[in-house]
Length: 326
Image (cartoon, rainbow, N blue to C red):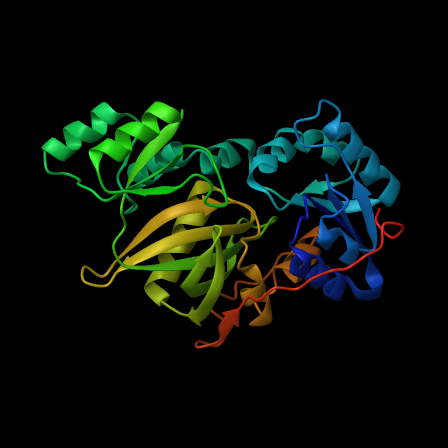
């Protein structure tokens, strides 16, 4: 069984985890559009591919799948998820399982305002959002919201171009300089992250790992500690199964301790940047994926890890000569 990891970038821990779980029973192949994307060099084979917006990108990936006899393929970046899902039939036709949710869910998850609308319809607590200055100002006049707020691209990832805004002058300036922005209520309370796996075969949520975020950097969790909350676990199971996610998803949450309410902020239908914390605690998504690709359902095993386990990211370097680069 061979696994293809697309847009591996710096996510070497995910590559290493799949290599460990496959052992002698398969290979891990990784791609990137740059030959200095370090994670690809931890894989058994590496391919430098065009950017995802290149016209022949999917054809190149399909050729790699055929050459390497790939069983399952997934991406580690948000903009590529919809592309893989949109071409799911082409992958399935050559015997490759795209490890991703449906195209519609990928699109909704990428578009933060559409996600907000979906959560509103489901009755799930989330931060108030506005896509125009007029709607925000009207809500502010009605006392529904006030500064500070977050201003962010309606579609985006890695916390790029997210600004904490404390005045109308700054808000107007941002909307004047950039397009497709949205205004989001400033969330009070502690931030958490949940790594969730929804079985590809049964559609049941089989694993959840909850972590309290201690420090963030560039949109990813830098330091965190494992925690549990049985009530939240039930809410996540109901949400993930009802909406229809499949495979690995990464959920951002806030807990307002004063109100004792969990607010769902964002959903990314891929491995989250903090997933290595879950893996180190025994919440094994690579093994679950391998089981599914072998045609086996995974048992429901939610919250099977220890609390109080800390993750601390730190810098590593990879040094290679020009001749060694792919």
